[in-house]
Image 1 (cartoon, rainbow, N blue to C red):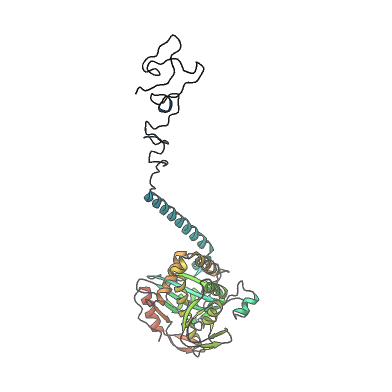
Image 2 (cartoon, rainbow, N blue to C red):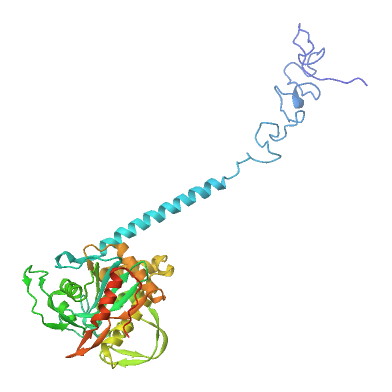
Length: 408
């Protein structure tokens, strides 16, 4: 059957040629002004790409589906996104975290360092013995009521005495052959030597008179205490650390209390102590009562020094743990409470303070020695040191040898 092609014809006087709208086109059947009808065969109309609507069927490009066009990934798909570079993301996340950690650590260091109260000038101590191996800290607990209200004094059973005195004194030796914590009973019999006044600058000649060790602090403060200890022992003191009642209680509360095992229960109306035997966690007020109690014991000062050593080592163990150091909600209150109340020498740094706490922790962990200054007897209510044992002990500390002397 012959196929009929409809399409435009050439204007009058012109003939169609192949490739120009059809083969032998004639005049439009509906008149010159009637629009041409689409062809279903040639390149125009539904199948063409010039004047009519291109459906895309003859090229396969349905809804933009041809090569190189939008959606080339498949029917109805958008542009293909590149895979995320997880290695790069992890790298930059790690760099960011490390940077934040470094900046925070540096800021914390300078903040904490600025809070240290460097008030003791050991350069004013005269006629000092030579420094030995290792580092010797003199740790003093004073009965200072600085910053305490009447309610605080009542709560902590401290009374309201003016001034301040030494409530406890310890030497902590930090060395390569184990750390040693030595308590100096405040009733120790010592000679007050010649010294230069810490504020007056005047020289006060020694008279050879013997007094209790805590009288040295009461007379001219930390520098005379250091001078007296060095004179009576021959041991060089490298650093001085002092804390008062309020600061001690605040540190204990900041770490959430300190757990300690009490061998035998005791009561003391003077300090407010009321303890049963066994393991228990003490808050700040209870801890202060525990370390201050002396009237409940027959050998009052010696037993109290043992309790102080035991508690301070437990406190250091609580402070120097990841649970405190890595927890900002615990670390910053602890640092704030402790550093605000610590009085140290002018050469003391945070590194020295950290070393002191870690050493006290090692003493509690069994790697060091905890003892009282060896006692040979008493005179006039003063405890007399065993001179032979003290000499051996000091030699071992100066040479950083393992301590063999005991206080028993």
